[in-house]
Length: 351
Image 1 (tube, helix red, strand yellow):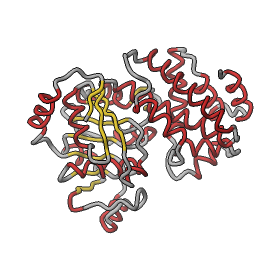
Image 2 (cartoon, one colour):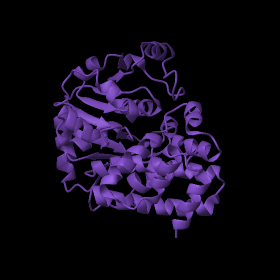
Image 3 (cartoon, helix red, strand yellow):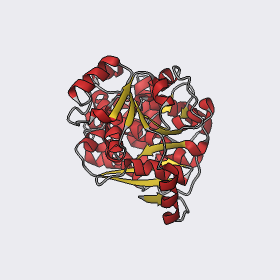
């Protein structure tokens, strides 16, 4: 485990983590999609039992019968005797001390409306790479403002980590953002294994915002791929995207961060280039001439970047950061401006 931006005595910290959490309550996974399934796979390497909230009872019954998620990452087998499934969010929250939220950002508030259990004494982890719509805040900020969760009890999971590659046990690098080195270290230890390397950073908001922006940039990369702009242009797009991301992060969450670290640039690269990237796939469909609605209907999974684009555009109206890529994607997705015209304008601004 690596600690980034945290000045701590590592041996004392690891001892404290062991003493503090050896009797901690059960870990809960909140969500039933591919990333939730991948995270459950990671956690079950280190935890004897987990709780798992999946909203549909029929999906739970199929899961129990098949011993794998019937809809996502179907090749990953689970020891279901070690899992307590429930479609009752309050039951899961009440009987867990660490809750890992892995629901798409557009649906997060809908799930949380059912919640009556207090979260103030829980460790809340967000693996949601999106902004809470309408509120236009990060997920950790939403839990702090709406549910009164102390900032030290909030964490996020970031870094280049396609669920499909986690399922294949390919090497994966995760960064846990948390203001508390102890709680961040606890989450890192829950996820770490031979194939999952973990880093702890105090830059929770920077990680959350970069996780949203990289999805926006991946949509742009997909659009340009659909328009057959070529590898030379894509490399310049990536270069400008990382500069745009850094400008925004420094304006909204100033910090002494290295933008070249894997949680920022690495996640950006894999999301912009990989065929596993649903945001790139979504953008490619738009570049190939699909309407936004048609592309959304044909996508089997949600492209978070579509919603993130609107949220980030609205947030940036307060900060006025120069963000031509964000503006271009917004104009294409929400203003119905021609993809070829908008990308031509964007390309003329690159150097």
